[in-house]
Amino acid sequence: MDMTNSFKFSCSPEVIYGENSVLKLPETVKKFKGKRLLMVVDPGFSAQEAFSKITGLLANEKVDFRVFDKIAGEPSTSTGDDCASFGRSEGCDIVCGIGGGSALDTAKAASVLITNGGSVRDYQGLDKVPGPGLPKIMIPTTAGTGSEVTFTAVFIRKDEKKKGGINSPFLFPDAAILDPCLTVSLPPAVTASTGLDALCHAVESFLSKKSTFMSRPVSLYAIKLIWDNLPAAWEDGSNIQARSCMLYGSFLAGIGLANAGVTAVHSISYPLGGVYGVPHGIGNGLLLPYVLGFEKDEIAPDIAMVYDYVNRGVSSSDSGYKAERFIEGIRGFLERFSIPGLRKFNVDPSSFQQLAKDALQVAVPIANNPVPVTEKDIIDIYSRAY
Ligand SMILES: [Fe+2]
Image (tube, rainbow, N blue to C red; front, side):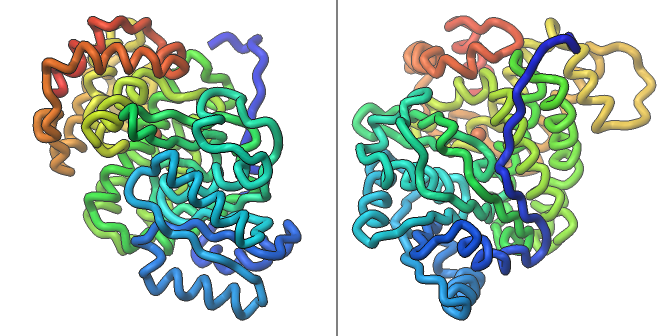
């Protein structure tokens, strides 16, 4: 790495981490002088006792709030628009997202739509949001997207069957509350899919052409935390040590993503989600070994560095061997978590060429990839992952 390169590094300004840190929500709302809080919540979480405790806490501390939980799966552009019009009509002046990436992304978009007007579609792309949003506090209940620390919110344009991100510095959360206790009730399948997404953020941001000597150690430590703790969190959801490491790991992976970007894995996965509904984390996870396999000969020393960090004590100096072992380790995760190939999602091989064209349109991550990727390379990757 060229240590003379200049860089900029960003992170949510306030990070509150620890068991039961969600108790700090009322004082955080007051700190931002919020008068009425728009709570954007995953419907699965809003039905849980943990959410009743949070709303009870807000009521006790006399924080006025409204709840929006009409989020079905990965959000569409109309989900974001509906949430914003609800918040606007209720006179909310501060936003809190609680849940997985869908709730957090919807909350982030609502915050800028309420102040700027317009609809999600107006702002999908890069730097299209004209001005700041309402203050936003993010509370992840999965360890996956890292949305609590990124400047992106992703929405599906249903008519086009395409996903698109709003990417703007005005989407950066003002505060992130990381409470591992909120993640213990996640079922194993969600732990696996969100954890694999976090692993992809960490690995891709580490290998990204835009990585810096500040982002790389963050991404590397994120990989280590996820590598060591995802199986334990999947095995026993109540393992608070593993849950804590996963939540912190996915947060660090989000910082890596926000500062160095993701790479080809995310670009190649996006069309699978848009056209065939392959869940984001699963799509990324199942593609990761094939994308690394495609590029390993050219970046073996970098992958070997990751392997050395996650597997102390291997004496080989052969970087190609280590890169291969790392990829094998990822395959081991996929097998253990019963992640199927693309065939199981009814992906039609005759659509690979169109999917590959669409993947190339997800241009920023493709441009970050350490090795150039062509349409033919992507078709090969889909075929191997089938
Ligand atoms: Fe992701």
